[in-house]
Image (cartoon, rainbow, N blue to C red; front, side, top):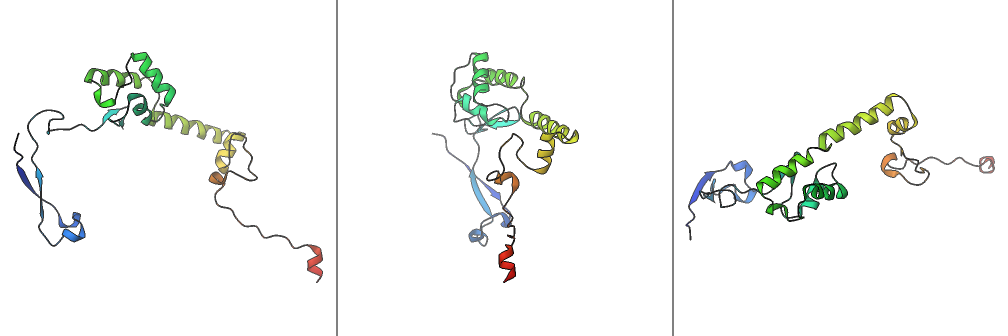
Length: 171
């Protein structure tokens, strides 16, 4: 068994919890062992693909869905194109991760996709078509009814004062 050596690191009092501020100003952490990835030295928790850290403890099909623009069907298609097994993400080798990054890079994802959608909506607003006007007013765009629902877009209900009937005004 390897012995753990303790290293004392000073910590600013403002970053400590209130209950420990008056006590010592140093905290001990085990010193990292010499070795490689996952052997006490540098430990990789997540794989970064397409600018997003995908979780290690899930299967690749579900981990890819953390990337904006990749859903269930597209992640399955990527795995079929690469002839990968749907294994847990942390079990992927370096070569598999590199090929997965290249395959995901072929699709419009994350910032590019968000920018594309934002530009498309701005174009609709600019040409003042029906959909653009609905976007501008913050109302549903795809033909939904607005009498009862769509509170998310319309915001909180504003109470409107009821008109008095002529019979009640004469009294």
